[in-house]
Image (cartoon, rainbow, N blue to C red; front, side, top):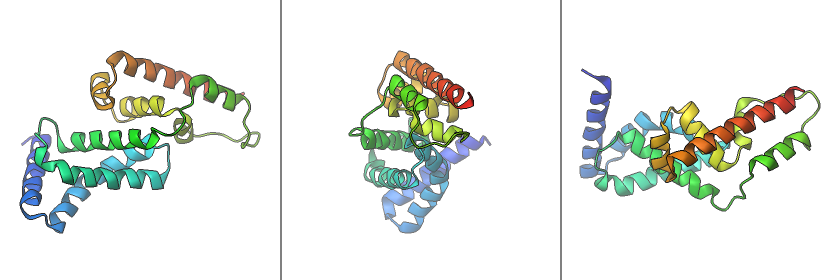
Length: 181
């Protein structure tokens, strides 16, 4: 039997049971099945802040429980949960000032809190990207979503997704080139 089919069917059984009983054990089973995959996505999308990632995951599950009755199973449960998570993270960043590529490069050229010789790792570099760049980069290059799926999740055009990915990669290359000099 195909694993994705059996996982899909197992999710349907658990969701059905949860909708009927609202029991904690069933919710915990759903939580344990999907949170290990959602947490790294949340962590990357929020730029590495564990507390923000945990808040996003908690809010994702709260929203999911409220709307499970209208979930139509047109996608996997994990994809649907990822969409809720992405929207939650976008909301979290709505009030945060977004830096464009030039501001990122200016910061790299004039670092204020790094010592000479300090190396920056990929996770920290991704965390420094603007929210739009970071979301598309993480979804495409790390999570493996297509531009069509990203466009649907983030409510942007496919062209915007491709452009954001191009600029995110360019910003990362510039960041690492500045650091290696």
